[in-house]
Image 1: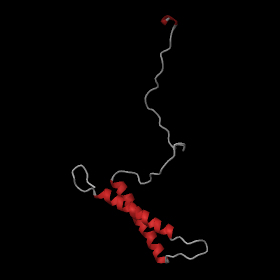
Image 2 (image 1 turned 30 degrees about the horizontal axis):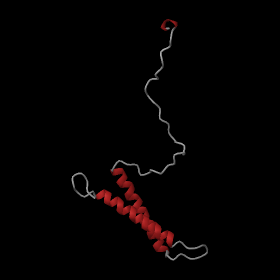
Image 3 (image 1 turned 60 degrees about the horizontal axis):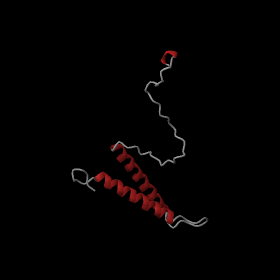
Image 4 (image 1 turned 180 degrees about the horizontal axis):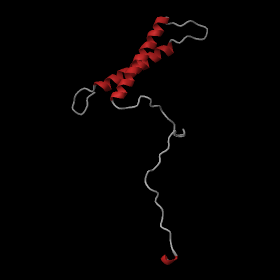
Length: 104
């Protein structure tokens, strides 16, 4: 990928690679998850290595987010989900002038 100056945007490529690695490792863990009562197809060392890789990916994603001033805690939300914050206007309240009997 290139940015406005035509140079390679390494952080975008890195984020894409990290995302792909996370998806592949998650798919491997999901596809090899043992059925109830059965033994895992993966050794304990391999399971630990996958967990370690996921941890390293997560830490790097957080670091990249901080470097770019983005929050790494973004979560998808639903339209009907109640908001945890409220917007309050700091502008003074605008009121209509009171009508007097002289105005009529």
